[in-house]
Length: 197
Image (cartoon, rainbow, N blue to C red):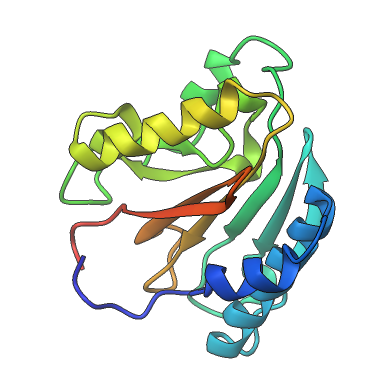
């Protein structure tokens, strides 16, 4: 990915080192990460008032357009929690009705999910414009992305997070960070989502 300033850009090694000394509960790790994302976001977007809330078993960090000022879009910054079985079948009619990301990028887009449906994710703030090859596992990065999603979904109760990184004022993230807490520590990978920057 070309060098671009991304918001929020967090040093996960430092956060994990501070949070994972001794036994730490996943909820506590989530609090450390939430603070780190909020501080990084607000250091780059000083008027960025963030909301934190629960939705369908996950926590979300959200930046509403009303708090963002002219020209900025509503956008979800991060989602985290413990994976769980899908609470209900996928609501295909809702997903079809969700605003289409078509025409917003040089490559085809899907309606992506920060928390995969198989890991308990639903809709609303969980959805974002996602590169189709990444979302469907059609590229080398996509295969790694899908492997991490499967790892999270196949082990209910696993702590995970998804952080969307932005390069401008839109709700179209430039990159996606997916993290999972493994027995040996916090594993995080960054994936390119935009190819027009």
